[in-house]
Image (cartoon, rainbow, N blue to C red; front, top):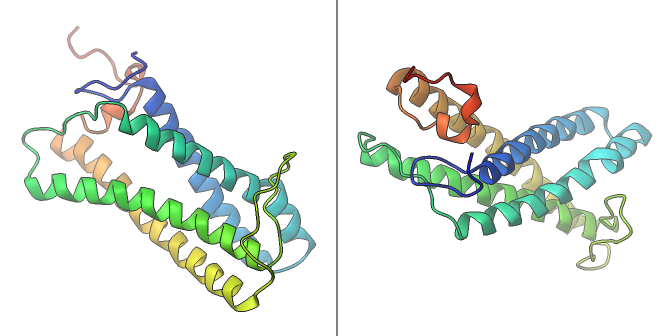
Length: 189
């Protein structure tokens, strides 16, 4: 499998970035819901500092790398039989997902900054705070964070449904090109 993308399929690096970010997003949404269910306290703090915060920073770093890799690589072409509205919807949902993830991470950083909790993902460095304590701004950032999380759930659900539809109903290569070739038997033999 090639490192770089081709017009027919995503390269192994783009595939790896996609699936690692996907797993981390699912983990982040899950731990976020668990933290909300736990409420403020020691258990929530341990979960937050052990996984949610450092994995959020990791998603940020991976998203920047994915975006950069996507900018310098080919993008596989969509099937020619795909209706124009689906092509537009595909592009809009992908960029919407990138934007929602960026807003999610930014709102977390703003929330932590204005709540006077520096973002330090168990590393020797700390992300800078934007300002001093401001409860109202931290609360607004929290609300953006929560609603963006639900937006991501909706976008990911549509993304998964579309991939399954392309594979099962349309029987095209949209899903296959984002999976390693070993997932599918050689249909030419």
